[in-house]
Length: 362
Image 1 (cartoon, rainbow, N blue to C red):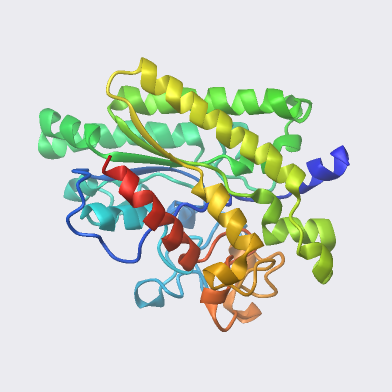
Image 2: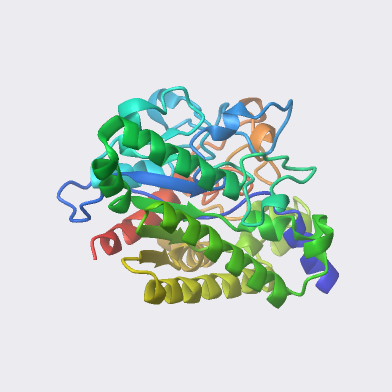
């Protein structure tokens, strides 16, 4: 059983992180936030991985059917049919969507709305991002250095005092972690660790990165829990194959338990940082796990009919460059929890976002 659970975790390629956003800005919110700076993986990548110089990658989404419900039905590199969390947090607080750091327009006054540093495939542990499957160069620590670069450029744009105030009052969103579980066994130094020791390593490393971002000037953090990886279509395919409907109706709860223990440990870490770092504020949401898990167990309550496969192609394995329009698309995306074999559809993202937003004003 242990070997089987490890196999399931190892091959979950990217993150299911299901924090989301509302489809329209909610005017009159009281967050007083100035910008959105985003760090993480495919759940929040807005197009940095468009610049990957590889022929095929499961960590790239700059093609249809991704973006089929985005502006003008245009694929942008977001692993979704619609917007992702940082875009819609921006709408909620009343600023423009941030450009990806590598986009040519991420300069000048555009930096004042924030910047998206996220990269599909990124992991908390840098070397787990750069394995033979992902080959993602834009690691978490690289993203932190990009942030440092942007703060210096902001100072040139609006002056040191204004730039410091903008960063201090911005939301810094972090959505990362499941790639670490997916590729744990592909590195010799992590493969031998117990679940508890690996969890400790992840939480301590995440804490260090958050403190790095804090030292650069951010004070308001939105940190996402990892969703139920044991329920993703790709996990079910590895566990059951593509056609065993009875088996596919059951999540791997051992995997889910490992993930949830990490989620709990992250909140404890954030609580400790809040007690020790002056001005540190955080917003942490278990809904990414709890609501998603409930929607999978009780789909009709949420208006879903299909929970064991994504909308793209067969829905059992398609991710990144493997999700292409010529493989087909489901007829009604609102009935599917997942858009591809890992990532949630826009409907669930909006649901989770609407539950998140009220806490941002507290």
